[in-house]
Image 1 (cartoon, rainbow, N blue to C red):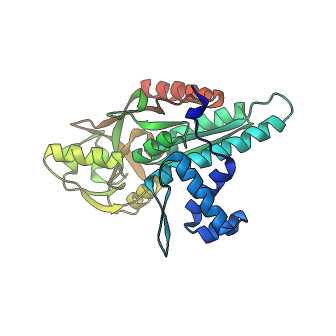
Image 2: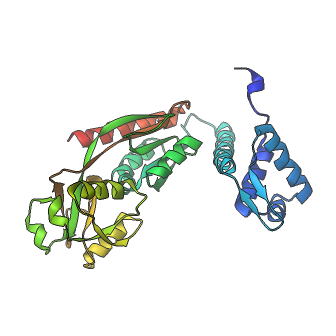
Image 3: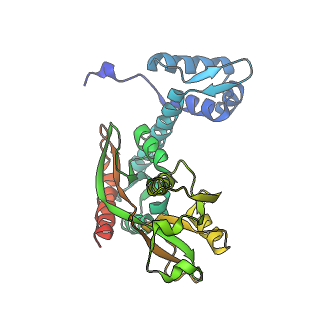
Length: 306
């Protein structure tokens, strides 16, 4: 690869972009960086010229970040973080493995499956800093594509280019309901039995919500979503308080020791999702990230087989 193919960007310019992105004001960003506003403006113009795109839109009253600016700001944050950690590592004596790994995961797996895996890895490599970002599927794709995350754990069906995926198996959906609910006596709950049920649900932009809504539409009815929340723990709190039922992936079910809630497999049709690893095709993993990825694949894949 020719040296000319690399843009001439330095850490000072990266910090300038991050400051303007955060403060949305050249005056405030200049004060934070302890520089003058004209100097900061020149720095931003220089990096925009180097990249060939506009990172910010300016008006007389405000500064807004463009879509290209959002993506570059995420990359700048990661580059500066990696640079800082790399310099610190070089200053360390000894051969202890160090570094930083960022994993982006759908909430259901981040809530139950991943903490034990990441904790085991952390005990084996205490010098490595791990960040777990939780979100919906769209967040996973954005994190992996921008380079903010080393890899993602989420849905792998119909993933577009330039992602590469590796399936770890299918995960069924379960109905979560109070132990005294009339449907709790059933070992499995058919979809049609929920036709008139009141649901507590995740946001409409979550893949879980779209999957269950699609299953209901195929069966000829629509669910009644009484309350929408963003976290599984909040879903279960509303179910405990008698607001309604909820439907979640198997990995997000409440503990079997829960005194108030019980979960039953959703059947006829059996609703499931395929989960796995999401990576960016053109990006190689650092050794630490590759090691964690291997452990995640082995442990999650084994769980799905069981």
